[in-house]
Length: 379
Image 1 (cartoon, rainbow, N blue to C red):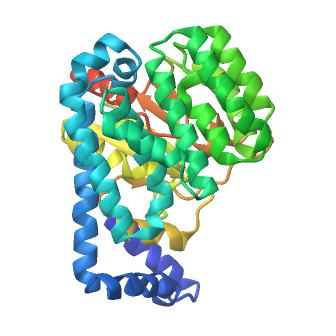
Image 2 (cartoon, rainbow, N blue to C red):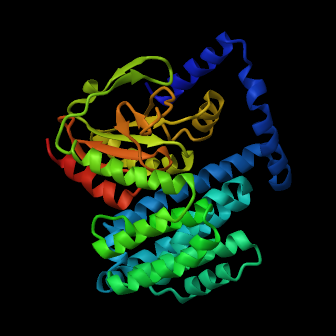
């Protein structure tokens, strides 16, 4: 059932229990009104914000199309130079759009900052000198937290421009070690070390082992979940090529069986932070007509929050299961071990067999899109 039906059922579900949805959502709408008063009418602001989000999704997808397998490209000096002319104009527009979204809705700025800094780091890696200047300015920011994020972003830039040289990659990780020791409970530092790519299968084992040792020194739930995620990846690897069975309830309360999507390519996305799901909108829009289905599995959410997300982001029109709560120990849902931040993406072929598992907390479209395209091409 699509999101509109799910939403109506959700509202009815809340009403039956004696809650008034309007009252529950009123504070959020009131906050929107405060921002709207500074920028014009609420309707005008929401339209501008919707257009900006649509442009962000479109530009993100344009980048993945212009630079297929961008993670492989950006880490290779030769491929990076060849792709620079295609990548730089799109990334510049993407960064400008992120600036605009943050201006229109400041509450999104903390979520966008990571993506924006990573896009600026990519621009710098492709050779854009202005982007490198902006990265260095981020490092010198008077706000300590923003300065830390700048240091992490510039480390990512150095990682990419190491061009796969293990010695230089270890130097990058060593540059992060003082931050890890200084901020052992920082989720920001932990995520940077994880996301920098040190846990990718293609990374040199010595580099990966160094990164694992670094993460073990950190005292954050994300660090623990990352190690859980590594174990989860090994456990899920055993399911590769095997059919996946799953029966559950949708958010609207209807029964759902994964078997009904046999003949379709299926992406199952376990999510806790909604921002990651916004990245799937472009993928769904392009590939759903060709036979892609997405099953969202929200983890540890609230009904009111899900309802607000679905109303403000109608592009998330794929099926959502009922809200799930991981069962400890093992952080499992439907018997499947989850990765960091209760996140995981599973891609099934038309026969319902597992073809890809990503336990990273982020949506890696550069990896997933080629696999989806390949599976859809097989009838």
